[in-house]
Image 1 (spheres, rainbow, N blue to C red):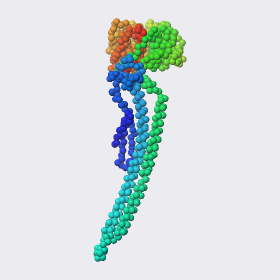
Image 2 (tube, rainbow, N blue to C red):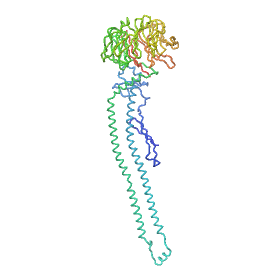
Image 3 (tube, protein in one colour):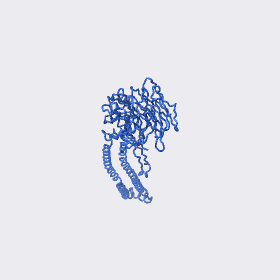
Image 4 (cartoon, protein in one colour):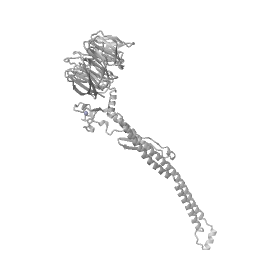
Length: 586
Ligand SMILES: [Zn+2]
């Protein structure tokens, strides 16, 4: 077994050949293994370190052209540096694009080498055949010279014989002749030698394989040049085709988006991205669109503002008038449609026409006063709305015609409805009012029916975490806990062992303006209690753990978590600030 090791660029080439040359009859059956390459990074992954040599996991790559090559890697600690250039890309997504690029390069290199080797291996087979033929021919010539030797030897046997009677006569005649037939002897020797030499020359001259082999080699020389010219062209063509593909930065962005959809159970890190001064525009409520390319915010008076949202930074796109103060905004997870619930109880459904224009539907009015919350089912064909009246209105949604149709209402028999939560299977709906929550169950007829209720101390929020598990957060100066409940066959049961205790801070005035945010895929629950925003995860043993927290400003409100769990935005009204955080998951 032969082993070749080549060093080609940053690729190591291992080539193993099993050549069975010891049996001449197998020479034409040599089997070659194709070259298989493995891309290899010169730098050791373990040794990659960030800009400031923090010895931490690399999170991002800076696009700042002023930085040295090796200073472009950024860890979490680097990201906390506010002086850092804004333009950064996800490190893992970047690595994936590089690996894809190297994989393509590796495949092309394998093709080039294997095409060349195929030709060389073919000529090697020819040489082996030549060698085998040559050996046969030489064996024949050796055989022939043996015959020659034997014939010469034969002359000896013939000439050493003598007759004693003839020799007596020769002595008497004093005949000094050595060979009786010397001329004939030399004639015979010369004749034999001449004959065999000519014959051998003839045989050697008849070895025509050599010319054939030389011709084959000359053809190969030409073939190799042509083949490599063709491969060279092909690769340039591939390179040309690649130019029409998406740019690497867009590919990285797309992979980043895919990576964001992966579940996470590792560490969560919080990176403050920016704090915006809102001046006089009180931006709330607000929401992200389906792929968080847009951030939709509103003032509390009359206007909706659409922002392009990228890497945590927002750029103004357009602002339009609503006509009344928006109290609640939600965005479709399928298309760029938004629903606004307003002071006065009306609802508009908006459709995006272009970057600057959104067209609104007619006003749908069923609520008498303002609307506090709206929720869509996953299919987005039903909308639930609730506000300052006892009714949960159920609407059917028609995006095609930008229309809502009122279906029926559910009477909560309470005075106001603040918020909703649907479970994953969408067979249970929680509606929260001031001091009571009701659980509604979906019937076979698809209509909803009262299942059970629970009264609580005034002000709280509730959110489904699992199909039959939900959490309840009291908005109360005296209580600093998140309670976990289970619902089985219409019966509610508090799971006391899972209660999450928060820091008790009685001096802090609680307000019901920060919703419970939950992302099941990323296993992250964001809850504000007193002066903290808590980040909570469910551990493998099903317990809830606080993994991090942010100390709030005076009155933070309207927390919004993007669908991929990556960005958290919240507002602080007294200081007119908007905070954006990025959540890094391992
Ligand atoms: Zn660092």
